[in-house]
Amino acid sequence: MTKKAISRKKAGAQGGSGHKHETGRCLHILQRLSAYIDDELASNVCEEIRRHLGACPNCEVFVESLRHTVALCRHRPTPALSPTDRQALRENILRAARAQAR
Image (cartoon, rainbow, N blue to C red; front, side, top):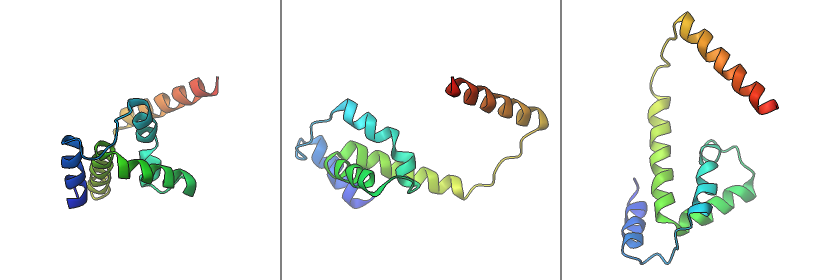
């Protein structure tokens, strides 16, 4: 966590940020964080998320934690799947894709 995020978190905890934590708004932002971190969103959406993160210490701390987690996962080897696990995973993915197509 960055020093900036820690100081904002402290300010938010003390009521100094002026941000009213709007659960629905924060959930909307949180749903897009993975795509945001992977740089897969349009620039206007990224700007909207950056504005929110600047005003919401809770979300800012969460995104820093998510970035750290992603970085750790990228440095770990991919675990090998058994043929049985691989088949089960494939079936689950296909089932989910079919359900979304309906």
